[in-house]
Picture 1: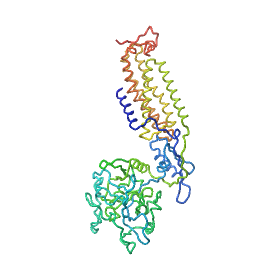
Picture 2: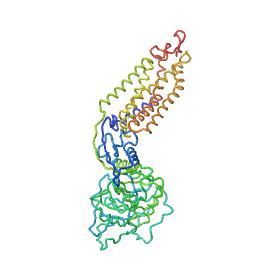
Picture 3: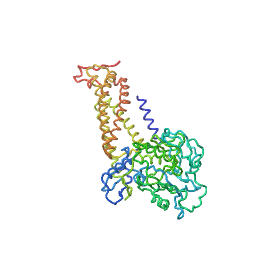
Picture 4: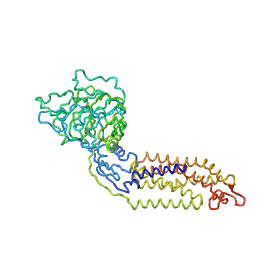
Length: 585
């Protein structure tokens, strides 16, 4: 067990070296950060309800402090919401908390160039591709495909050029078999207008951008299927200039048709009512496509979401271009409008494209933690300095050092030679705790604040208590000369470990309950206490007991030396002359 513990410590140290993480990340009270004040905006200008504000606070708290260990703070101040995030830049914080982040899936009804065409001309074709590709890392120009598809994305068979339009295409293989109700495209449809069927190597002609701008028709509505499109939406579509008004942050009503732009402003859309809303998303996570190596966001739907998703993809599959596309609208902007090549059942989907790990994680977190019930304006954004700083941190560390020193002195005076075991056990626990804090900061966003430090200091007593229970059990077994040291160590361990586990279990349960019921600094204190309780169990089982067993082989302890802490005088409740301690050969 000692070798296993040593291997764990070396592995954690190696991870710290590889990630160049040598010191903990500090929280808001020790390192400062960014404070953003959000002011709610309601459609009629009235004050928001307290229920909607409370819901917004909970959602934002999940976004900035989902794990409860990042030391971010979210609180109401009147009708405003104040968010304080440690160590983050203004742009990162605003982007994280300011978006409504509700994803809506809408069938595409018409597509046009982002800038308005000449008066009287209504463009429903994708814009002419430009020679300049889209910027790297942009989350637009993605494609949706069913999760679990094994068909690789054939770049040569992609329909529209994603550099010119956000319309991607769905992969040809669905998560499950097509729904029984799905039918093929109408036979009256020209063959060149059909979506590419699974396995096809030809791109959909209708969705491919023309090589030259079409001539302006005499009738501005010529060739446009206006069936089912609201006249007000058509008027908005004709006059919309995405270069001036991209619609970022717009609250699109799910029960109404919507006119919106792509993220790069090159394309505008007329979209049908929302077929699936963000509230139907059960989970969202980022990952890597094992086939292409690209980062993607995986979605799973709940409730009516799977049926709604299957229905809209089936409807789009049986429609002519551009209505064979389903747009994904996030925060009022079309982030993707893939061509649906097959009805997608099973309640799962993937968004892929020009993702990096950062952008994929960001989008997944926004979708996972839901949509804000209100629209907010940033009334103030400012960097804040630490409220405690180096002096308070130093004071906390000094308090911890004093507590540790007192435990060491007590152990050495009372247990003498056995006190060395407790001192070394505390040293090992300190090393493992420090490594854990550093690695949690590097990989899980953990930030060390004063409540965490208090929790770590309190844990010194928890760890020392485990040693005392074990040592006293050993001494009880050796009293009255009934057992040798080696036998007493094994018998005492069987009895002591039950007590140690029960005590640590009670402490850990208390920490877990406090962690989930509390927020802010109290949750941080509970997390630190729970972490050190687990470390205490690991150290006692993997270091303290094996090390005591190893010391029992030394004559200094086995013969009951006066300074060993296991001498006859200490093992006896009666005068020394009447009692002896069994000695080992």
